[in-house]
Length: 306
Image (cartoon, rainbow, N blue to C red; front, side, top):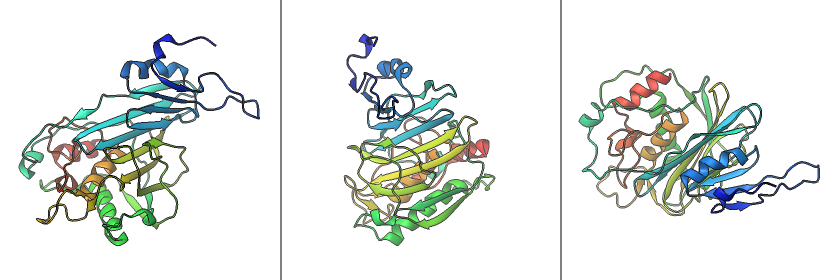
């Protein structure tokens, strides 16, 4: 096998092709923290391989599909990775931005959010209702199942209904349908990796890489049609509240605010500039529920996409 000197710093597990019992090459795992090495690695990947970049990862999808993963971190930064597999099996890197650190501020205000019009679009949209389930058994002890369920439902509706304090009407042609509770797990690993999709959109709590608040994985086909989106919320490292704006809140993260941001990714919104007051800003601080309410740019992006 041809050596890959430029990738010697990568942790490559199974770089030599292995034959399975059926005569097919076994899947391999790759990990890197270096952006340049990540780009070089694309030519060696094939469907079924596992790729990890910083706090996130993906299972390379089959031909004709793409997958995007995003982790919002408690320190105000974020990291994401998006790859797609062409019809001939070649793997391409779509998005690989370095982690974005949010600027310190005195906190977003309704007025500034209503005058900030920037938005970023990712490469997919839902052409039908987003039908999703909640893995209720994963709910952390500081919340009741009903509280967590309601907060996530409201977060999803904040996106599809364009909830805002700017007087903007709902002109977003996106919708969701909550299908109830499930025992099925979201297709994410404790290391922040997107595993193989199963056709069922699931949100739940669980373990994630250190510092991650939540991770969302969204899969799409070659036409840009979203086909699945799962989310996991970190209950091992962080505590959660459904009353982020309460005076009694202390060092807890607002579930509705964080999940509104995550659902923005599900519906095709990318991150805006660090320090922005919009929902799709990189960082969400403890006891800050403002991201649950969209700003001008968030609404503009959703209207553009839907």
